[in-house]
Length: 280
Image 1 (spheres, helix red, strand yellow):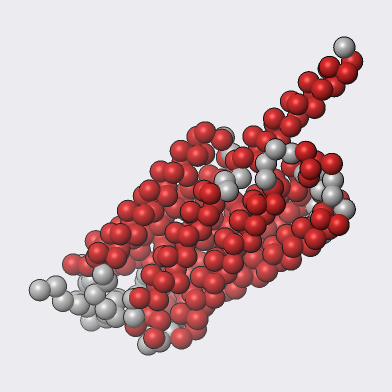
Image 2 (cartoon, rainbow, N blue to C red):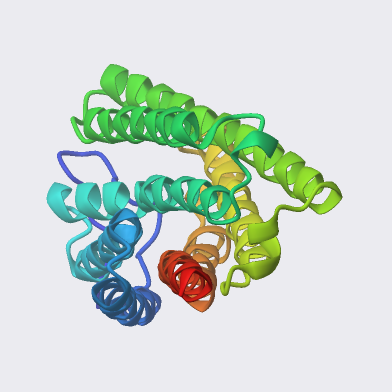
C-alpha cells in the first residue's frame, strides 16, 4: 500500500496526491493543448502562442502530480508540479491582454480606450511577464528546502499573485470603459467587421473572472501557510485551480481571437475591392 513519505525528514506533501484526478486533468489539458496548437496553426494568430504553451504547462504539471503519487519523498516531481500548475495563468493572461488590443484595433476604437492599443500590450504584458518571473523565482526558492528560503519564496509568490490581480483589475477597467464608450459612440468598423467582437469581449470578461478567482484562491492558500486548510487538503486545488483553468481553455477556444485577425483581413480586402469597383 502506498504511504506518505518524507524527504530528509520533511514532508513535502500533506496528503497522498490523487493519481486518478491528476491523470484526468492531464488528459483534459492534453486535449486543450492539441486543440489550441491546431487552432494556432490554422489562424496564424501568434499572439495566442503563450496561451497554448500555458495549456502545455498544465499537462506537465498534472503529469508530474500523477507521477508523485508513489514518490512523495522525491523533490523533483513536487517542484515540477508546483511550478507548472502555478505559472500557466500568467501565460494565459499574456494572450488575453493582447486580445483586447486586437479587438480595439479591429473596430478602430483606439481613441475610445483609456490606454492606447500600442501601450496596452506593453503595460499589461510587461506586468504579466514581471508577475511570471516573480512567481517562478518564488517557486524555485521554495524548492530549496531551507525554511528561510521557503518563507521568502512564499512571499515572492504572494507578491507575484498580487501583481497579477492588480493587472487584471486594471485590465477589466480598461475593457469595460472601452465597451461602454464604443456602445455610446460606435465606429463604422464596429458595425461592418465580420467578427462578433462583442462576443470576444464577453469571453475576455469570463476568462479574466475565472483567473481572478483562481488567483484569489492561491493568495489565500499562501497566506494561510503550510498548516492552512487549503494546503492540507487536495480538493480545493482541483475546484479553484484545475477546473477553472480548464474552463479558461474551453472559453478561449470557443471565441478564439484568431477570428478577429481573419475578419480584419477580410474586411480590409472587401474595402479595397469596393474602392476598385467604384473607380471602375
